[in-house]
Length: 252
Ligand code: NDP
Image 1: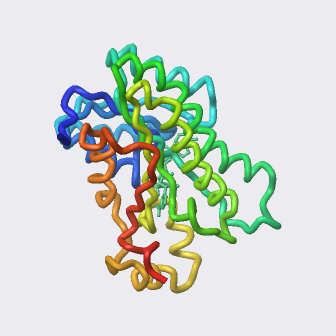
Image 2: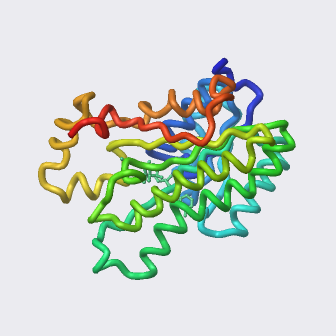
């Protein structure tokens, strides 16, 4: 039910953090995982870790904000693998500034990387998923898909958009046997949160205290949910958003 043998998966931003955690989970389940990101050195290291898990993995240069780069990446996947079954829209960034200090260029940078990217990659993946007889798209949202974030308004807006894009895409492509779901991670220890962890006094302890699990998330904590949403086990699950937050969002 959770076997991904023979499946081809592309993970945007799969060269580190949460993306690599999911890529490793998919590889362990048997998928051939393509790491698609900008930093070639980090991608090469990620590919080595996936090969060690038995995946015939490779890296692709991809800038998710660039429509031509997206098209080229998906063309190359299908040229090299002959198919695509799973897309994980994970690449993301943030700018930590309140609305009154945020430049328009910063707003666009966050929206393009976090939200428009998922639209572009899903649209490019669609004909290939359809040709494979169906497939899976996993979009990465956040707790900020639900909560407001006064210190990261563009990030919160982009992640709220991910949830609505997930529902709309799920409805559009259900007849093509494509399930589209989102994961909403809580606070994970990655490069993305390094700034907040280092700059916001007490944040590290506050997160530990509020999360029912009593700790921050690690990239490996997200792997099981990604495998579930990528596998036949979730064939009757679509358009939903699953929190993976150690119980942070259920706590007051
Ligand atoms: P990291 O900063 O560790 O990883 C971000 C990834 O995105 C990198 O692999 C980076 O690769 C890639 N990326 C960024 N911009 C682009 C781009 N233009 N084109 C292609 N790839 C890009 O962050 P996380 O692992 O923490 O974040 C992964 C996802 O999880 C994001 O969507 C984030 O919003 C989400 N998330 C994270 C949480 C956390 O607590 N860490 C909480 C909730 C959600 P490269 O620079 O090589 O391109």
